[in-house]
Every structure is written in C-alpha cells, then in structure tokens.
Length: 255
Ligand code: PGA
Image (cartoon, rainbow, N blue to C red; front, side):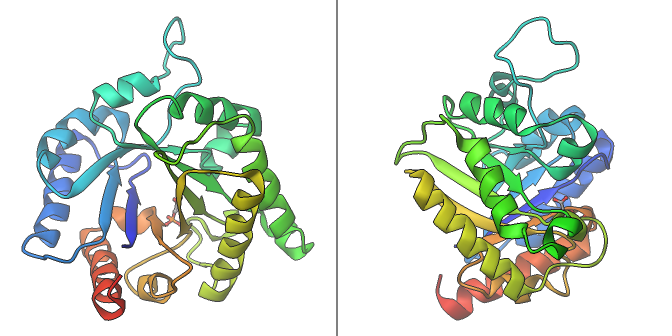
C-alpha cells in the first residue's frame, strides 16, 4: 500500500475546497486498486469537506493542532476538536510551522503526547535545512528531531505513525530531493525509530516538490511508503497524476 497526502496549506476557500474534494473523488472513482489518500484542507473547510468525503475512500486530515486539551487558548484548535470535525490525521511539525509559528521540538513533542491518547494518526514532519545537508549533518539532524518528537510518547502496537521526510530546501522550491537521497534518509529514519523503540506501525513518506512528473520515481521505491504533497495537491490534474502513479506502482509491484 502507498499513501498519498495532500497538504492544501493556506489555499482554497470553502466553496473551492468542496469543489476540489469532489474533483479528487472523481479522479479515484471506479478504481479498485487505490493508494490510501488523505487530504488536509484549512480548518475553515474541514466540516464541509468532511461531508463530501463521507463513505468514500478518501480520508480527512488537519494541518496542525494546539498543544492543550481545551481551555483559554484563543485561536487554537485541539485534537479533540479535530476528531469531532472528522479528521483521522493531523500534520505535526511541518517545517513552515516550525519556522514561522514557533513550533519547537518541545511543542512537537507535546502534540505527539496528546495525539497518542486519541485515534488520530500523526503525520510527523522532519527534515534538514540546506546548511545542515551541505555540512554533512542531515542524518544526525533528522534522527535528533525524531528523538525529540517522540520522547516519552507511548505508541502501542495498535497505533500508527506516519513520518514525512521533508527536507526544507525541497519544500515549495521546485527542487525535490533525489529518490536515492530520500531512500537513504528513510533508512536512517527507520533505524532511529528502531533505536527509540517505537512499537507503532510506521510509514515513512517523502515530501518536497513532489508533482505529477516525479511522483512515480519516489513511489516505486520500496523504502518510500508514499508522498506528502503541497503545491501540486491543489492542482487537480497534478494530484490525479500523483494518485495514478501510486496506483501504477501498486499494480506493478502488487503492494
Ligand atoms: P510542496 O510542499 O509539495 O509544495 O513542496 C510539501 C509540503 O510542504 O508538505
């Protein structure tokens, strides 16, 4: 199975989100073999998109969540509220939030602890900066990020963890990592998770300038369980091409 996640970021109003979600459904209709598909609209569109997705094979996710259970936290949305809104997934530690919204390792860790008590699946984003890669420290950096995110987090065999390797320099730049770089880092991530002793079922995705043209080259790698797609996920023909690449790989490799 391959997993394809669309991170719509701060794009699309409610009506556009409904139309886009319907477009995603149209593009998967009639196919027996399908990757797992998750779409992550803005908070404002979650409940309307949920109505579109009910009883379909496309799941709903959120782009972030607050660090507290409930209370006087103006502007925050709790994990329980996301559950209530029908989300099965939530993105944590996206580099844009780390860079622009103060989402430190400690904040990511607090969120992971909260999610671990729910049935939502975390999509935990990790990834190094250009400087870190140039300095040869990318692997160390990503392993450290994972350790910090998962410190004291209890994930049982029944839980599921999605890790998205998203090198910062590849996000929204049109310059993706090479599949070989991604495969190598995915190996590092799996090894780090083994060392940490994560009991959950884990999938490792690649993200960063994935589009309809390059998706297949990532998805065909057995070490890459799927892709997290930003910009191309709000263009229906691109997203459809990515989903089709996932289907082609699943059919060709019988996975
Ligand atoms: P991108 O973003 O596909 O636009 O590079 C990926 C992401 O931020 O998740």
